[in-house]
Length: 158
Ligand code: INI
Image (cartoon, rainbow, N blue to C red; front, side, top):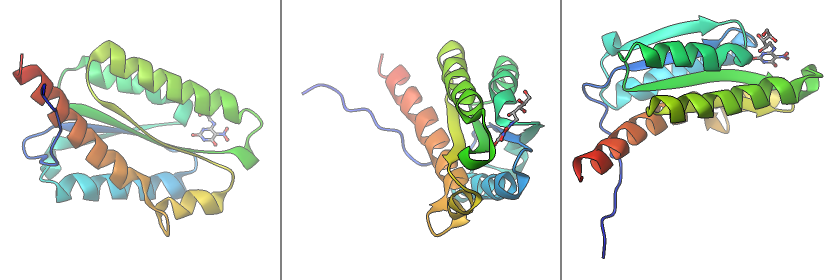
């Protein structure tokens, strides 16, 4: 059997940037708190977590790209909330954020995590930002750490 690669949950020594949208900040502040707590819980040092606030989710890809280009970060977490019921251009904002964030990950070769809620209502958003469905920011934190460690495991095998 060939190799099986996995990324462990140890975040010690990792440097992480979080880009977070101010739009719907009642929700995104809770996502940010969840992401921070998740990173700290897995051993990332407080001083190794930088945060960049952007106006809305549509701006996340550009700022993630700038953060990646500094080469200071092992991973970048993007946090935002797009609520379908409150925007006629939901597809443009959510789709632009998703495709842009994916492109930055591929172009930079670093994990750039999609922690953007795309939901129908504020209630659904709050449920996923520390409510009964959990906290998508905390999930994004563990995804970032796992992906850094997975890419390292693949690289160190060659
Ligand atoms: N930005 C969001 O992050 N969430 C939204 O729900 C939203 N709505 O409803 O429009 C939103 N719009 C702003 C957008 O992200 C940009 O900041 C704006 O279009 C300027 O480029």
